[in-house]
Amino acid sequence: MNLDLTGKTAFVCGSTQGIGKATAIELALLGASITLVARNEEKLKAVLDELPRKKGQKHRYLLIDFSKTNQIKSRIERHLKKYPEAHILVNNTGGPVGGAVLEASTELFTQTFNEHVVSAQVMTQAIAPLMIKTGFGRIINITSVGMKQPIVGLGVSNTIRGAMGNWAKSMANELGKFGITTNNVLPGYTTTARLQKVNEMRAASTNKSVAEVEQELIKDIPIGRFTSPQETAAVVAFLCSPAAASVNGVSIPVDGGKTSSL
Image (tube, rainbow, N blue to C red; front, top):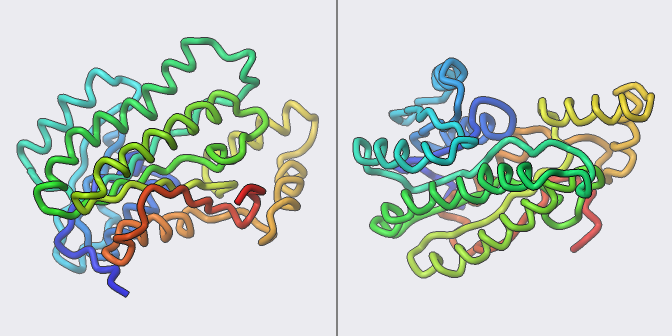
């Protein structure tokens, strides 16, 4: 199986922690040169120092705040003008705030749509021409199992994840002929700071301990535990590899089997 990414350049968004960071490390282990993309420069520099370089890679970082959509286009285009190489794009943005969908403001919907769908669109529009030129491209969107099965209490997230899925499928149809695949990886309950925060909110609203909340969640997961960021990153890495050239336009849950739908 060809998993070698030597000579490839991967842009990994949201790569200073959690699944994004684990993905950047995994892709570097397969030989890719990584461009970390996030909004905290101090954290970007710290992760940059952790990335493997055994295959002579040149890793970089790009400072972008995806909540400020007016800066995305200029910053990615400026970077690509200086370093005109890109084969892999991992779109990954922090999860939207929780809450009932009926109570969500229109401003929150707009903000979340911009941070997820619009940011992915802008990044892809800038990077896709370079992928087309080389005849190789991988676009991976790290979203949520809420794309397939809405999660109670995450109304805005469920809505935007669905939009992201349809955007990705449209992109897969358009770019496939150029050797570019577009797929979604759908994390379930994963041991990240995001899950910890959500569990703390659930605990506070139900007068339960965080440990009790965690056990209630785990009992519905067939493998009997939460997923690690590294396990999710491994799925992303496979989809980025030459071996996954015919996997296009799909959404793959990485949730230990919790999602009920096929």
